Amino acid sequence: MFEKIKADIEYIMENDPAARSKTEVFLLYPSIHARIGHSISHFLYRHKRFFLARLVSQISRFLTGIEIHPGAKLGGGILIDHGMGVVIGETAEVGSRVTIYHGTTLGGTGKEKGKRHPTVGDNVIIGAGAKVLGPINIGSNSKIGSNAVVLKDVPNGATVVGIPGKVVKVR
Image (cartoon, rainbow, N blue to C red):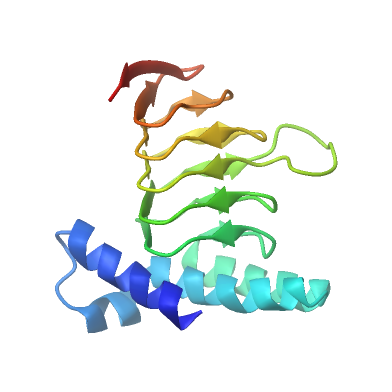
């Protein structure tokens, strides 16, 4: 848990010009508070304490405006910038060194069982208001434009914009 929080703080210090100190980030950034809440709820979820996991998750959501399901798997070095309205679903997997802006949803598209949320690679930026839906893969080093609606796999190094999301550039 502590390694990922430390990685988050380091990543935030590198990528958020408003971050003045590690103490400020730890004490005042909702991204870190949501991450701590998720670490606790994910531990409870893995140990089949589902009610307690959801309770911690909902308290964290109330306090931060960021909803991360206890079942979601998150890597290290995540910045949820201006996080209000971010939703990360139960079977979502988020890699390392990922920036997620406010209003983003990593969600499902129906009531099917099993894997139903996105898998996001490393070094990805997801713009404000983006909706990334379904059991799709977002390749490493990709960028998802603000308000894009992504319903299909995104290759590594791609930039996706629009509704529905279309690849406009591949590095």
